[in-house]
Image 1: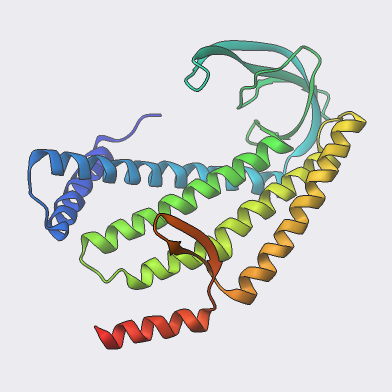
Image 2: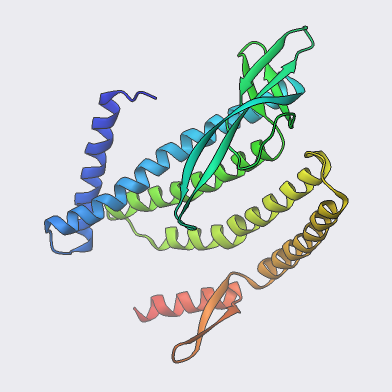
Length: 276
């Protein structure tokens, strides 16, 4: 994908300005190492913010396309390409396969397309549920692949959007108290429940609409669905009843999790404000 030089120049210029402003607010020594370190952090936040946002928007478009247009088919793996990928965790190379599938449309056409993902296990004759839009001549893989991609891109977009907003507030010397409070509440009231609910929904979708699996695999899926559903209900009841969980120091070098009522937290903030 080619990127217009004007956008690259604007991105580098904006990151450089943010770096100068952040270092100035930190009040640290303005050496090359400081600017380089802060600049690298901000560069990473900004680049991931842009790419996660664009990928999330693209995935939303794919999901919308599946819901409003196109036809669903069952495609069969007719061939595949392979690539050796280095796994740094296990310190070895792993073979990844990208499947190419073929299917017959309701118009009598036989279409062959390479799918947009790779897997460690594929063989000729495997089937995938796909959505084909004749107008765009585009194939979208359904099932786990689409929903995992949607959930994954949303998570990254959510995280880096918050980081980017925090970067702007800090760079332009804005008060960060409200931002920290929103981040904390968004994390415990929305982000964590979203992860749990999203994963539970994926398990349910995989059980009901995924590829065929054995009885024992289905039993394991049902077990985790029940356990995770109970955990979600318990977490939501506790969180909305007792407020945001906090880490409390009970002894030197010893910390435990606890729940603090919102009223108690507000009283502490008011007392701190009056003291300061």
